[in-house]
Image (tube, rainbow over all chains, first blue to last red; front, side, top):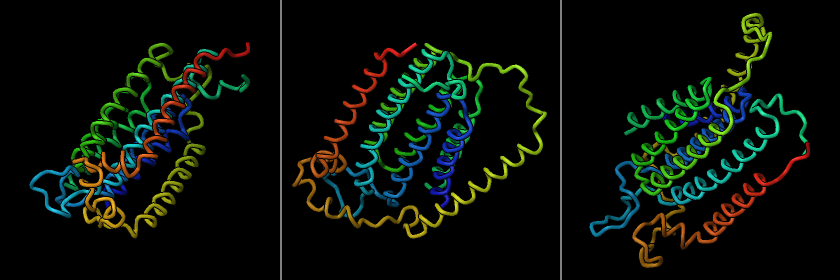
Length: 112
Length: 183
C-alpha cells in the first residue's frame, strides 16, 4: 500500500508542476512525471512476490511468474508517451521561434 | 523488496520536486533524468527486463531531444520581470494557495485510496485475466518471452496501432516544424 501511495505522490508532483509552472519545458517535464508514475503503478500491480521474469526457460515451474499482461500494455504506453512528448516539444520550439520566450503568459495571440 | 522500492521512489520524488523548482532548464532536465532512470531500476527490480530496456532507450532519446530544444532556445526559466516583488504579497495570497493545494491533494489521495482499496496488496497479485494468455503460450506463439508473445501475437493489432501512432507523430512533427506562421 505504501508503494501505491508513493507512486501517486509522484503523480501529484507532476500535476503540481503542470498547474504552477509558467515555462513550457517545465510543463512537459511535469507531464512526463505523470506518465512515469502511471507506468510504475501498472508494473507494481503485476508484481508477484518471488516471481521470475516472464521468460520461459528449461527449469520453469508454472505459476512462478510475474504477470506479463500489464508489462505488455506498459510497453505500448511508453512508446506512445515518447511520441506525445516529442510532439509537444516540437510545438514548444515553434512557439519559441515565434514569440522568443517559453513563458506561457506572454504567448497571447493564438493565431496561425 | 518493498523497502528498496520505497527508497528509490522517494529519491525519484525528490528529483521530481527539484526538477520542477530548478531555475536553470538544463539542471531541470538532468533531474528529469533522475526520475526516468530511477524508473528503469524499479522496472528491473519488478522483474520486467523488457520494460527496462525500452525505458532506457526512450528516456535517453527524450533527454537528447529536450536538451537540443533547450540548447537552441534559452537556458533560463523566465525573463526577469521588472517590479515583481516576491515578499510583498507573501502573506494572505500564499496562505490561500497553500490551503487550496493541500485540500486538493488530500481529496485526490483519498479518492486514490478508495480506488486501490479492492486491489491485492503489493506482491500478491492473482493471475485472473492473464491465465488465458499464459496457457500454452509458448506453443501458440513460439516465443520464449511471454511479453513479446502477448505484444506481437495476441495483441498484434494494438502494436500495429502503436506503430501508426508513431508514424502520425513523426508526420505531425514534420508538419509543425515546417509550417510558416503569419507575421
